[in-house]
Length: 212
Image (cartoon, rainbow, N blue to C red; front, top):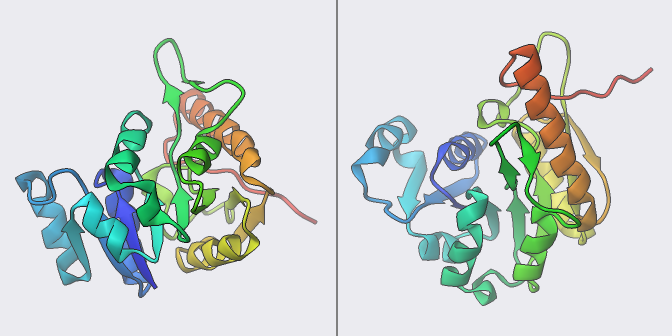
C-alpha cells in the first residue's frame, strides 16, 4: 500500500519512518521539502521514505494521513484540492487544542474529525492516533501492559484498512467507537491524557483497558 503523509513535523516524520519499517511505500510532505531542516531526518530515514510536496503526496498515496497542525490544515487541503483525495481513506490525527491558561479544546459542538470529513466529502475520513504523542505512535511499549487505540469513521471498509495499519504499527488493542461524530470523544480523551501527563509529570503516557 502507498501512503502519503501530509505534514513534516514530528508526527509526520515518526509515522513515515514507522510505516516504512513496516513495509509500506511512504512519502512525507511539507511546504518546503528541500529545506535543510529536514536533512538530519532524511539521513536517518535513508531511502525508505522520501520528502515531497503536498501535491505529490496527495497523488502518491492510496491512503492519506493528515499530520498537520490544526491552524494550517484547512489551507493545505484547499491548496491540494479536495477532489484529489476523493475515494481515498484519509486518516486524521489532528487536534484543535489551546494551551494558554491550561489545555482546552478549541471546538465546541464539533470536532476536527467531523470538520475534516466536511472539507473532504468525497473521502473516507478515519480518526485515530490523536490521543497520544508522536513518541509512542509506533510500537508503543509499557511495562504495565498494552495501551488501547480508538478509531472512528463512517466507512466500515476504510476502518478495517486503518485497523490493519494500526496493527502493523504495534497497536494490538484497537476499539472502533462508531461514526466520525465520535471523534469528539477521542479528542476529549486526548485532552484527558494531556492533563494527566502534566499532573503526573509523565510525558508519553497512554490509556489502557483493563479486562477480566
